[in-house]
Structures are given as C-alpha cells and as structure tokens.
Image 1: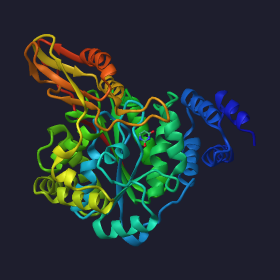
Image 2 (image 1 turned 90 degrees about the horizontal axis):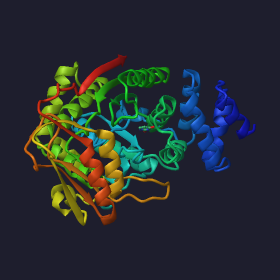
Image 3 (image 1 turned 180 degrees about the vertical axis):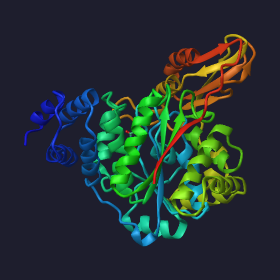
Image 4 (image 1 turned 180 degrees about the horizontal axis):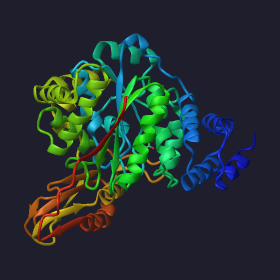
Length: 435
Ligand code: URA
C-alpha cells in the first residue's frame, strides 16, 4: 500500500478500508511513515471527517498498536476520561475518590493538547511521580491500592501517544473521529470494563457547540458498546475554566485542596457526579443518588486524600508535596489583572484563558517544547462574581518575563464585566447512557 494514495483517498472524501487505516497507524507507530505524511492524513480527516465504521477501525488499530491489558483477574474495573478542558483537574480528584469508595480504577491519559491541560503533565509536577509503569507494577498496584494512573507510552496505545503529539502542533485537534479514536484507544488498551466520559462543550472545549458535543458523546458511548463496555457520557459546560486555577502545579495544588475538602464548588460538583456514575457502573452503589452521597462523604472525611497519598507513594512521587503544597515551586513573576470597571463578571473566556496559560509556559507550541510546570493563572473571581473597579480578578504566574505583557493584554480581553449578572449556565448539561 502507498501512504500517499491513502491520504489522497481521504482528501477526496472517500471511505477508507480497515486495511488502509491499519497500514497508516502501524506504519506511523513503527516510524516508517513520517510526520509530514501523517500530518497530511490528519488534516484530511479533520476537513472531511470519517464514517462511524472508519472511526471504529481507527480506534481499534490505535488500541492494538501496543499492549492491551487484560484485567479480568482484578474484577470489574472502571475509568473516566475528559475530552479536554481548561482547568479540568477532575481526574486528579476522581481517581483516588472512586478508589476510596472501593472501585478499581486503572486510568490512562495523555499530555496537554491544544489550549487544554493534560493529566500526565499535571501528575509530573509532583517530584518523582512516574506515569510509565510495567505491567507487573500496574497489576500489583491495582490489586493493592485499587487505582493506578498510567500515561500513554511505547507500551500502552503508542499510536495515540504519537498521533496526539502531532495533532497538538498541526491544528488537527477538534475533530470528532480523531478525538473519539484517541480517547477510546487508550481507554480500551487500559483494560477497564466501563467508562464515564466527560464531554466538554463551550468556548474552552474542542466541541464548541452542544450539538457537536452530543455527537461526540454518542459516538464514544456507542463504540464502547461495540466493545461490550458499559459507558455514560456527561456533557458539561466549558465556557469558563473549571475551578480557580489553570496550569500544572497550580491545578495540582487545587486538586489537593479539593481532596482536603476545600475545593471550589464547580470542581467538587462535577467530580462527585462523574465519580457517582463510576460507582454505579462498578456495581458499588445501586443508584446515582446513593453513589453521590458516598462520594461526597469520602471527599469530606479524608478517605480520598489518604488514597491519593497511597497512589503518589506507590508511583514514586514525593508525598511531602501533597501533605504541604507550599513545597511546590512557584513561578518567578506574577502579574494581577484588575477589573477595568465595576460590575459583575459575565464571562471568562476559557479558550483565551487556556491560550494565555500556554503563552505563560504551561503548554507546548512545538513537539520538542518542554512544559513549565509553574506557569499558569489563578482566578480570584468566576462568572457571577461582583467586582469593584481595579479589584484583582486573576493573577498570571510565569517564568517568562518577556511573555507577561502580551499575556496580560490577552487575559484582560478574556474577562467580560457588565452592570448586571448574566443568567447562570448549567455545569452539567446532559447525561447520555446506553447500558
Ligand atoms: N483527550 C484525548 O485523550 N484525546 C483527544 O483527542 C482529546 C482529549
């Protein structure tokens, strides 16, 4: 087969065969197909889309590019994945929380993508934390602690690892088939039996419209069903960042605060809802209401925090940073952004906030860029908050002195203030289930 002919076929809007899709995925994973050809293919998919059948084959090829864990000896296992948001640190809280309630949670994840952050980058802000584990380590940690947090690697969904990194720097992220195959290939390779998908919609999401988010949610759930996996998709709002922080260390600190019972309301609400769905799928709770009460209790009574400390220790991380988050390094420069006029905050554009965090050093612009874990943004106000003229709305944190003026101008524009409160938007918009 010839990669150029396959690219042309997709460019011209034709349906690819399973063999053609596998040929491209395997060739790229092995290094036989170069980045420039894969970039051309990804752009053709971005522009022309894929049929459901092509998307399923792309998912399965990517899943089979590495090891697929067989966790049947562990019992029923569950995992959660977000389609990408700004300030979305739900997984950092949810995994220990669900495990503290008795669920077995093998979770897989990638790095930051586009303007959004990634769980792997956030976890790596804990000194020593390892997200690449051997099969034996995964099994023994899951049996002993009930949770394991694994990054995509040469072993687990390597095709996603490579394609994800390429999409990040070629403008090909917001595509329903590419997101579906990326999310599901690593979920299926990770071996869990049932999933909760948090599908984001709004300015800071890859699916800006609720209609596209629903399409993505339905595809995630229906391909899971093809694989005989139970799944629930929660469609949640991403017009403003989730919680009060954006950036790796800042988000880690907020996640730990939430595990200590002091987190912001939106983060807590969404985490409890996603955890509750997981507990029902895991057969631990009989219904969503009972599961929510169980999760809320374990978040408040320190059980989830204790479980997180166990996970961090087992994966080589320095737990003293979790016990005392003041130990995390801080960026050298900070700049407060102040309200230009008195009134109410009516918008904090999540996409602009994510891109500002990028500019400050929290994300990548090229494949070879390294992340500045200390960079990011702390929000002092959220939508609906009242401000007086000159009151600080947020603070930028960076080690890039030369970026701070541009970042400040961008963030100032991202904040909308009006004389009256805007109608409040729902955090959880819709839930899709096919059990
Ligand atoms: N999360 C993923 O794992 N992949 C995507 O493409 C988007 C969000």
